[in-house]
Image 1 (cartoon, rainbow, N blue to C red):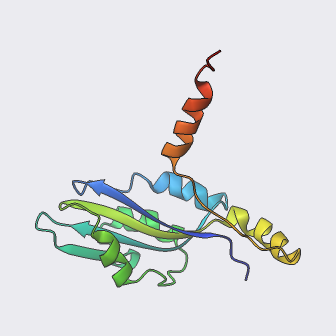
Image 2 (cartoon, rainbow, N blue to C red):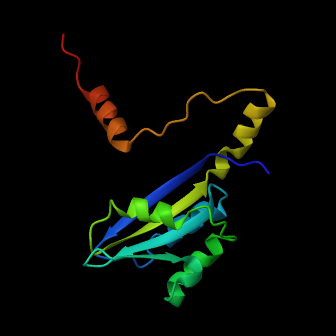
Length: 145
């Protein structure tokens, strides 16, 4: 099976206010074959800093479970509890997060073409949005005579 580039994403929600609002956008990405969710964990830190890790099958809120379950057709267990514990250190108390591992399926065909051409990817780096914004702002600055 061909596999495109895989990324891990941790999205935090201060104040434990996560209620599934991101589901429509995530659903669109899955349905348009832009990404394939390989695994997802939900993290919650209470006011005392105690961490709870929840897998999709353990979600108690039926609405949230019903929204996320079809987006992850097969939970592969790629994300471990130790991954979640390590990444949860960056969360403040009384916050929650979604930890997701996803394949960029849009890039799979291109990846296969590179392999078939005996090419090798030398660099694949995500540039932070703030860097691009700074570069764009520099381009808009008038050049002094």
